[in-house]
Each structure stands twice: as structure tokens, then as C-alpha cells.
Image (tube, rainbow, N blue to C red):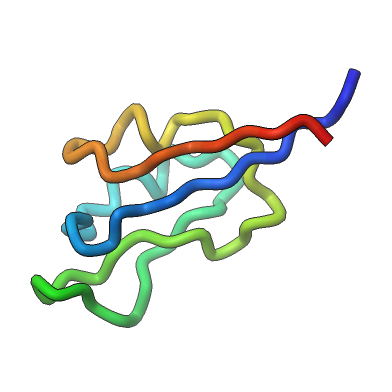
Length: 74
């Protein structure tokens, strides 16, 4: 059985930095950026990309649906 590697893509211009995705991530991959988007919000990003398993918890809890999760078998 192969190992699964995940990655998330956040639509940073729509993300409002609500932080709901951060505690939903079991591997502590997500953090809020110190930079802000065009609306003035700190947006979510992958702080530890190598730890992502592609579990989709972040995408499920995101109230605005700005997170897309990709999974690949390695």
C-alpha cells in the first residue's frame, strides 16, 4: 500500500482568515499568513506542506469553500 501525500490550495483573495481550518487539521499543516490579501485579511496557507495527508478536514469545515485538497499516492 502506497503512502498518500496531500496538498491544499487556498484561494487567498477570498479567504477571510477565520481560522476554522487550523484546529481541524490533524497534522498542524495550516497557519495564517502574516501578509494580508486584497481585502485586508490574513489568509490561510500551508505552513508545513510535507506533513499534509490530504485528509480534507480543512476543506470540509471552511465556511467559504476556499480550500481545495489534492491527494497523490507516492
